[in-house]
Length: 342
Ligand code: SER
Image (tube, rainbow, N blue to C red; front, side, top):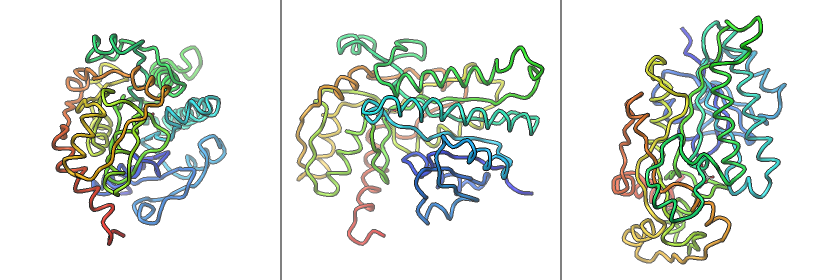
């Protein structure tokens, strides 16, 4: 029997590459991918089929859906928060209209198969908007329903798409003849800043964490675009991938909501710099805060309350800050930049 197919958009990105490796190792699914840029051969080999194209291209998406019986969608393609501020209209097109296209495809597919296609959506701490640092400090661990007033286009887009997903899951065509047809099954995770040993993200505002580490490992100086006290939650990439798979596999009956915070560790730019300097004593890290990017980071919570995920689908991170640095990031990053690395 052939394995169920997962469709991954943005597969060539930071999360996508790690997810592809994990799914391949796991062996239960076959991956079909869509990304603007062709996947490198190493990742192509892990897929059943890869498409280089734009998620705004409805014809391409319909083609993909016609050729594969898609059971699961990981919709990872997005423009991140800093990039989105540079081109808000484009961010809206990709992040909202693009997501709408994927929801439409998944919903049609659910009707065709007569069962709910599971749609896993990475949302973000960027959907929160704290007005200032004192309010942020006072708020501490923020729950899903609090401070839903984002200050970036990306944050607005993610928050709205969470609602779209909930709408498609519970209310789509509630008045029509298709009211009883199978709908998709949308599940969103609000990720903190993600740090991977393999890739440096592009266009995000939590990028100061990963950039600092990757610069030090390459012996490059790093000018941090937020001050040392700027603090947000972060997560090591293996935990991010694990959380998506856990949520994907969770029994629908246990899920009390369509949106979940996930936390791992909460550190400031200064905490990361101190740790990097222990491990790379020659690291040259200075602070040159960019007022807009620093303001965005200040609007994000310093920690998240993920009780709902822990209760509903047994979420528990494997990596705290020490373990993430010592057992995942440092060995991985050193290997990544070793002179004889492939
Ligand atoms: N990491 C993302 C960003 O910085 C937030 O989800 O834009």
